[in-house]
Length: 559
Ligand code: TEU
Image (tube, rainbow, N blue to C red):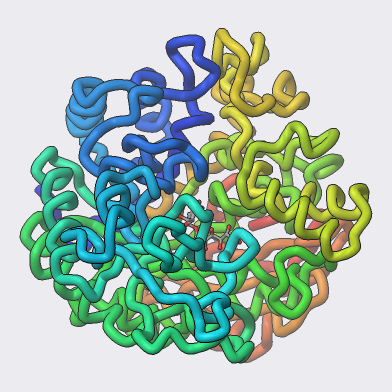
């Protein structure tokens, strides 16, 4: 039986199907490959599998350019394969969460093909078309997230259409009730197939200011771009989806919020608002962006990382919102390489990343490969990369004056392909991912970093994740405990507590390659440690009965 808000004790595993497991020798992962690995995910303790897009698509943005919302891309398999996957997941008491990409569709979608036929075509207003500006230029100064203008000119009808992402991803016009009807229909189609939930792609961009004002360059505090985010009718649209699909089918939903605010995330995820179950926000993953600019390099700001994590813990807790917890996904470089040490202290670092995240309040997301400590791959040159955003930016950086080497150095750190290389199953050819040639290279360190070797090692990163996932189901304080930051600006250590009536849990992480010493704040010790049953969550998740008055921490140790 599904108890209310069951997903507050769940852990989600994110599958990037193209790189998960190939069963045909095509060099690309497929649905049957995921079916083969369900026992592995069940063993890890996963409750929900977030399957990224497998719909019909020209694959310009690896499936986030959908050309048929209710059909499976033949590269991934058939609808029968999908139905078998759904049944196999249900039979293991696990849940399937599908990716819904409805801010935009592929320009190869029949809707768009019709829309571009003529200005009076019935599908014209499914998309956002604008006349050229009086001087013949672009309708406004909006820029695509993948670089370049956000408007593409259509010769046939002499108008521009909006593309906030790639030029082959045309933004849908949510002002049009027919578009909203189509979205309800396609979500109902998948809900009827027994899908338990949806991850909603860049869902806070669907409501545009109908004046389409120029971007005045004012940015939201810390990041983001005003015209992109949390538009005038976004909450109205989400509430309509909740009323017509999420609620009736009791779905668990997560909204991907590009450059949003805390206030909006509280509105999006407080159950009383009847919108989403939880939200992804990205502020903590921009602490290495010099003044919010992704395509410049700087060492990450540790204090800002801790402050953002803490602010969002406290703010969402006070506002009744719910965080989707993550450090990794298919759009980000591997956190292991980004925030810790992926060489000498790789294993300690991978465990630290896990312990630091899984001690927080929210629903944790495990992105494929993080549970075995996969680092950023080594990229020789741009020819090894596949991501449309990386390839665009490699050109744009050089147009803006960077040398090819300087551009490549930035791409190496920032590219989304860092997280898109094939899952490393064993030390056999192509890490057991494919019998063919992989669509993107396997990282050369796979013989030392793979699933098979870690399944048999009780001290492995894999088993550390498995224990953390189990602990979330065992300790109520992980779900409900008040969050209290403890490190007070320590230069190496991030420490926090989760406190409930019965338990005090303390999570301590040394994000440095040097020994560290942490003394817990006196008032905290007096109030929460003396006389209370205090537990120290140890990296290997054994619970230590008493608490020293100060904690010695070796490099990248986490407790
Ligand atoms: O990502 C939206 C998004 O904000 C990221 O693309 C990020 O802003 C981008 O990498 C630039 O830094 C979602 C999907 O997760 C992503 O894979 C898609 O490319 C994008 O939407 C368009 O559908």
